[in-house]
Length: 639
Image 1 (tube, rainbow, N blue to C red):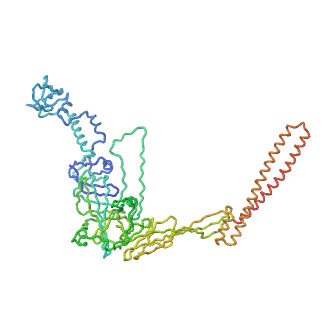
Image 2 (image 1 turned 90 degrees about the vertical axis):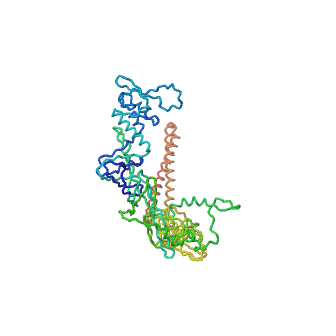
Image 3 (image 1 turned 180 degrees about the vertical axis):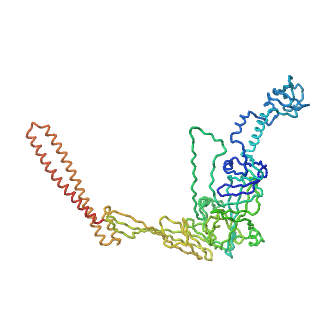
């Protein structure tokens, strides 16, 4: 018998924990073949004796080992072909015991038309010393006496039955009486959708969470205790089902890791930015001749309807909005349990979800106070949105929401953990634009050793211009994108990871809001790299004192002298090298003209003059080197 599932616990990581019981010793657990590894990894049975299941080896290979293959059409004929040489008992006009020799086809000379298939096949038996034929159509019963073949036929039929149930593995479990079993298997992750009811007069919001549950297993869930848990336990796949063949002597090691979990509370539209950008291009505007043209969304009309007229009429004529709201709210029958950092919702009544079916189940409701407002983002100023500003953030799971104002449908939204407002529809009363100006100025210049430290301030100014076509002032939340390294001059009312939030009250008509931001940077410039004009421009800012100016001028003069002396040193060094080359040439000539005394004396005089010049150049080099050292020592006094 199939076991009875009693409890189902579903997690958002896409796994389910199941508890079942069975009063009998033997029971069956059908499992999707794709889920079998998780079940084998986690199956626990009270008083387990054994759990058997079909091997993952391919059925065709197993059939080849068995050596049996029956055709569904002509089953008896197929069976008899496997009985050659085996003893059987057949029942025809009476019982006969004999050894099967084979199956023959006897020609029928009769002119009867439409002869049934196998009408002429006969089973040939050796009974004692006689050979007898028995028409297959006359055989009423056939008993196989060979026990090995009987087991092979049973195995074949079992394989064919499992092959027909494609993708399902039956675990046949033996345990003690009144046993229970538990296991984990992958399931569709449960999802949440919300119904949000806002009472305008009371400024109160009630949010009802409805879970979407899918039974993707091979077993019906009949009157089970259902738990829905927000936690995400670590779960991984590990192949236990397929036979493992080890190539020896090499042993391969599996290295598996757990991916890090990254979580962040985003803005209201984070998940929709890309979708909205794509969908915006699909808005059509009506052109000449009434034909729709693809393009950007048309701007709001110059005269938009009043906000109080934007509330939709009742969903059904004659039904007051409040009455509709009371009737449409689902009844919540769950218990909320804290399990560490996770939350479990236990449904108080039995749940039945058959396999391949899904269900909507209300699991919780929460109430919080909130105010109607308008949300504006500086990167989506053409999309002012009506929203409900919450007094405290909702600590709930992410999910889609349907919003009702006083029982009337108002729009859809997305609920995120930690969000402090719910935006649900475009507001056509508000139009906005942003102008950006920026400038950079030097805030301070400080002399440090032989370089200037320059402090610069980059200023950014946003000028927001609003048009409120409503006759009433509208509370508005303006979200401004944060820029790297920039600080807000005006403290925001709140902020998220990516946005500053400012609370505004937009009066009817035109209004302007200016926000300033600044960024401080520091730059170090070596004095040796300063030109005279560049230094003069810094001095003209008035940020360099007279004493620092004189100090920098002295440093610049010393640096110039050092560079001049270094250039002189290089020039004289080159002249020395030239004299060395000239002396080598003279000596080479002296070797050649040994017999010409006059010419020899002339070259000797030249060599003597070169030696005298070299001596002077060496003295000059030493003097320049000493001068450079003295100048550098003077520079070090300024460090």
